[in-house]
Image 1 (cartoon, rainbow, N blue to C red):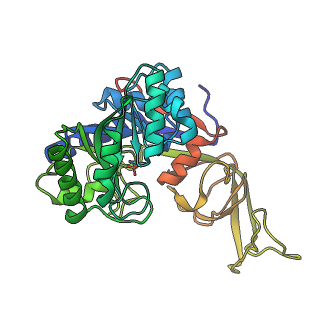
Image 2: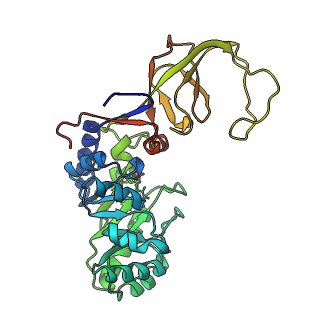
Image 3: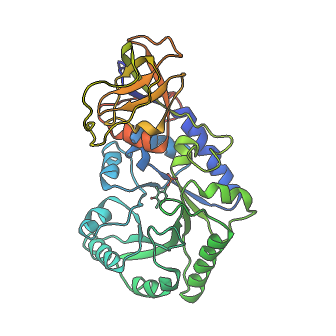
Length: 361
Ligand SMILES: *Cc1c(COP(=O)(O)O)cnc(C)c1O
């Protein structure tokens, strides 16, 4: 494939290393099964294959379209839907996935009916709210919903789970993790169940994991960010021993000129509806690169050379290039955060190039 800009280069050897390392670290503390999350890369089939090849069996995503994309590339389930299913989409959920995370009985009833029509049994993990205030039933309501789910013929309750650090920023700690463990043990005892999963997420579970001896009844984890970017967005800035730079965004300089640092003329709104503010720093060597907000999130990319990002419009990135000798035609590489990786992987304008595919696919 001829390389062009903008492009994202994805080092499969680094992702494979992250997958194997994390499975081992979590495994040492009692996590028996590991779910690989592909939503940060839109269900990219090449990356999904690297996950599979290095020990992950269940692939999880938040969108049905991403499972379809993997299926079209020949990747088979088991798949797990992360985002709570919509009531209007239960047929598709049952058709494309084996597992889903749930918290609403009306949807679980819908899944059960759809599964019966399809002659299958769909596997359900009930989410429990532990304080982050995204999905999940309140702990005191877990038994009531369990009693409604158990009689349904088209679904099987295979686990309970929780999600922390995605909305409220709540960290996993001994208190909330012990509560999840004891809720699971309570359900198993009261209803004579053997839960396949007591599942936690996301990548921020690693900090807690490091601090504990054993994870008690918790035996499953759902992780994406840490596999792809080494958890570089986490509070403690990454997980030691992982690669943070498996993804590189590359853009090209399309103008390099010395100009003033403040615009002149009548100032109105910018293209995104706000009034721009500028600090006078005298003349500077201004660079324009061929990426914009349609391709990435400009607050979340970090140049690997010494340029300073000034701003971006839909298709242009403006940077102060005084400390470099960059010329028109030069390429500039950037590290990405999760949000920037997600946008770049979603943009059809950003070419995807896979590095080190030998042995990792
Ligand atoms: C996104 C998501 C994960 C994985 O989160 P990462 O931060 O990418 O590790 C796990 N569980 C649920 C429910 C999610 O939505």
